[in-house]
Structure formats: C-alpha cells, structure tokens
Amino acid sequence: MNSFARRTVSGCLVFLAGAALGGCRSASKRTAPAPAPAATASAATEKVTATPDAGGATAAAAAAKADGADKAAADSAACDAFVNAVVAQKSYADSVRLLKRDDVADTLAGEAQAAYACAGLLAKSAVPCERLPAHDARDCSLAVSFFQAATGGDAARWTFPDFLAEVCKKVRKDPASCDKAREIIAKGQIDRCGELGADSVGDCRAQIKGDPSLCPPPASIGKGKHEDEKGADSICVSSSRRIGLMRSGGLAAVRDGGSDGDRLLAAVALDPSKGCGDVGQRLRQACVKALKQLPASAEK
Image (tube, rainbow, N blue to C red):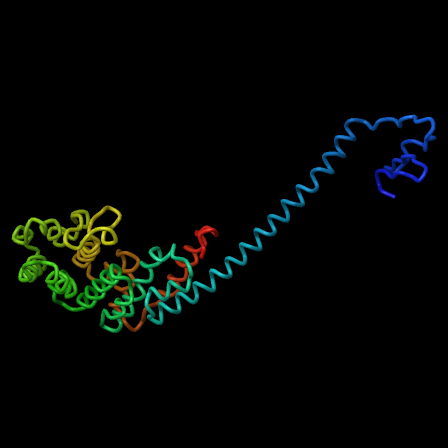
C-alpha cells in the first residue's frame, strides 16, 4: 500500500500518512472525505514536482562532466602527438593536422616557431624553419640568422643578419643598396638613412635606435601575416627590438627582456649545451589551452 493513498476493492479511499485521516465510507452514502489542509497539499505538490527537475539537472550535470572529461582526455592525447611531431621536426602542416582542428593552426604557429628555430640554432642552419608556413618560416629564419650572428663580434651581421640581406637583395631593384643599408645600420649613421630611399627611412631609423615604434607599415614584403598588432612590418619590429636589447646589454639582455621565443633562443645561444629546454612542454601547454577554449561545435 502506498504511503499516501490507495483505492480498495470496495471503492473506498484510504489515506495513510502515519495514521488514518478518515474511515472507509460506504459507497452508497457518497460522503466526501475531509479536504486536506491547503498548506499540506501545496507542500506535497512542491515535493512531487521538484524531485524530477532536480534529478534531471543532476543527470545533465553528470553527462556534461563526463563529456568534459572525455574531451580533455582526447585533447591531451592529440597535443602529445602534435608536440612529438614538431619536436621530431615534421612539417608544421602535418603536425597540426594531427589535432584535427584548423581553428588552432595560426594560434600555435608562434610557439611552434620557437621549437623549429631552436632546432635550427643548434644545427647552425635555418633548414628546420622551412617546415613552417611561408610567413612563419621567414621570421624563424631571421631569428636563427640573428642569434647565430649575435654570438660573434661583428655588429654588421647581427644588426643586419645574413638572412635579411638575402631577402633585401631579392626584393629591391638595386641589390647594392642592401650592402649600404647594412653598413649604415651597423655604424648607427642615422643621418644617412635618407640615402636608402624614402620607403626605407623609417625602417632604418627603427633599426639604429632599436625602437619598434618607429617601424613603418609593410611595403614590398606585403601585409596580412607580416604585420604585427599595430600594423607594422613584423621583420622591422622583431629586428629593432632585438637590436635595442643587444646594444643595451648583449645576449643576456635579450635573454632577460626579449619575447618568450627570443629569451629561449638567447639562452641557447649563450649556452648551447642546455639544448632547447622546456620548448616542448611550453608548446604542449599552449596546445591544451587552445583546444580547451575551442567550442565543441567547432571541433572537426
């Protein structure tokens, strides 16, 4: 018999709530039982209707938690595969494809660039950088060229790295002007920047002063991926920042005050025996963070 009520064979209704609230009436008299207090009925209704909602919310929360755990495990495994591929110097395109998310390719390219650049610096070659997309490969190659030159005493080579000289001679109509630019910047002859042409004055001044804020918008190299957040040429921005730090305190200043990637590379340039340190761990952390922020509906 239920704790609240049960209809008997004879048609009588018996209420049970610890004690009988009324006796069994004869069906012929059809005398209605005393109504339950309104407050009691309301409380019973609230109890009955609230229970399914609470159960549903609990089930939904449990399902969401399980889905979140499954996603976290899948993301972790995918990031492990991605990082192992990058550290093994597989192409970035093949490595990021292991994540099965196009949404994070650009986001992780910067951290991955540090891994390829570090491998190149240790190998004394920019070949590992070639495994990156074109725009990232260019910045990676410039970094390797700069830090290789920074370990020597020739200012002309780190103020105007060999890679930059090669790019300059490919894009300028007068390749000889690139050698002049190298000389002017290395010697800090800011009054001669005008000799390089109107389109190069801003870049020349930024390099000599080591001030990224003086960098002009991209010219011959193009816009888009080559621009930093302020619309300046990323080559000018990264080079001038490195030059400014180098002039203030050498590689130690770059190691202590440069961008995250430059700090790593400066440390390697100062002591190659330490290798690339935690570059793989940093890349993995960036990967997990990027995938965690990706909406489930955007996963592929």
